[in-house]
Length: 196
Image (cartoon, rainbow, N blue to C red; front, side, top):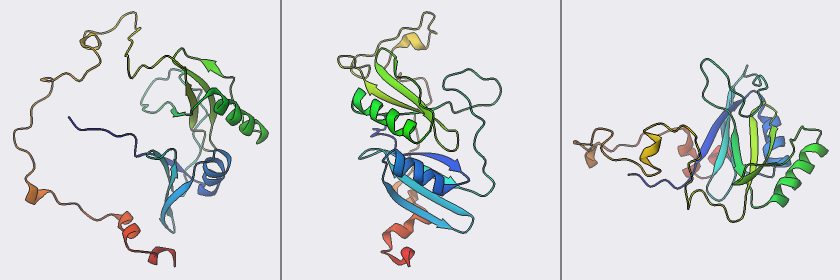
């Protein structure tokens, strides 16, 4: 199995990168660590933690989402409900709530979910955001706990990845075929020419 180290970045879309920068960098305090762009296209990255980032593509004609409350069921094609950012403690939740409300941006009450305390809001694109602080003494990663009253048979197989459920790799990619193709980001290895 591969060894995952976190979320490198979540990629979102906006029609107004400046509003995104004001919200994510200046209000929430996430550093703007990288940017690519040319007329009609920008791709910027904000640092969540020492490893995780959230990124935005700016495309012309992108409109904010229709507002949809976090966790409210929908029908039809749908893939994304909300993103949750972990903070260190409840004090961080209250600081974020105060900052959002001072900026006249709606922020929910702080909710106890048993293993986390959470506060909810929306960014300028109506992306639903949750901020979550761990509850001391409850660590679901360390001690998984399934509380579904009607779990499926597959769920009952347990928390660990199950082997033999997918075909095994019989022909791994040979080293000579492991070619990496250049993308726009290769400019970051070319010095400062992109900033001129």
